Length: 129
Image (cartoon, rainbow, N blue to C red):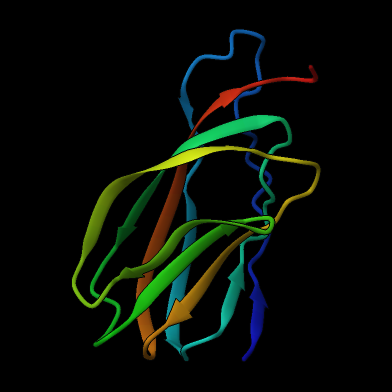
């Protein structure tokens, strides 16, 4: 099992005082024959003190029997989503409050994955309450 960290992009998430529902910048990974059990860590961490309510997952067909698991910190938001065919979905999740410096990761499962993956988070700013 290998761990790969992608380059940090430096794009900021909206963290204004209004706390309205927002969508994060796209976190994009290009997978090239990534074996099952490998973990891809995006270079940009989740902003702290936001409440994630959904994950938008967009992929092409990544390969036979492939799945993706999306995590923020130690919390699994999407578990073993089948990606043998293209995916374009908004997946509701139980509210997850982020902490300081939590990594965003993809874990490949089921088979060798190749193709582009985009992950966006639907969230509200909670702030420093």
